[in-house]
Amino acid sequence: MKFILFSLIVNFLFSSLSTGQTIKLSDRKDRVIPIHTREDVLSLSDGFLNPADDNFLSNTSEIHSPFSFPEELEENEPEILPTKISYDDASVLEVIASNFLKEISGNLARGSSISLQLKGGGLVKSGYSFPVRIPEIKDRVFNVTITEITETGILMTLGDVESFFPYLEEDARDSITKDTK
Image (tube, rainbow, N blue to C red; front, side, top):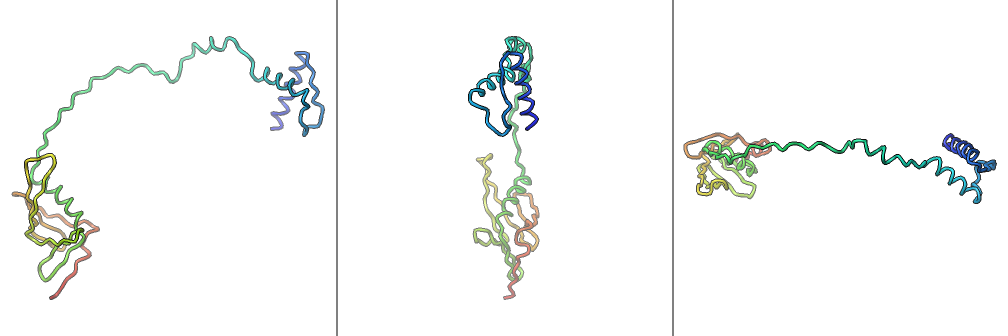
């Protein structure tokens, strides 16, 4: 900071000598410049720090802007035709089972029969059947049957497809309660 102030003062002195103006800066360094000298110092500093250049605009007009980009040619994108998705029973059963497994909060074993407890509080036993509608297929209803409930998962049936789905890790596998009555 002292170096910058010193260099400014030296430049002001040399500028004032070349223009014929005299600025006396011989006071102590911690004092404020007197009012009658301030205007001279400011005008000299403005002339030194902000020199007017009339050719500036003509020189800069030839410089290319880094923000201008050449126009890109528009490519013809291929038209995407809607594909017809075939919903086979195995893929539909997979989606239904993954959503159904999220609704299981636990299971309850009483003797040899095991029931599922759903998050809403309802109990589901083996042989339970429920309809499922898929929004993409409005005219078809899928009837899913829970064929068997075990300690490790459930066996579900949709049409001719039968698949076993293990419980999710956070589900009821560890919460089996056996009642010996």
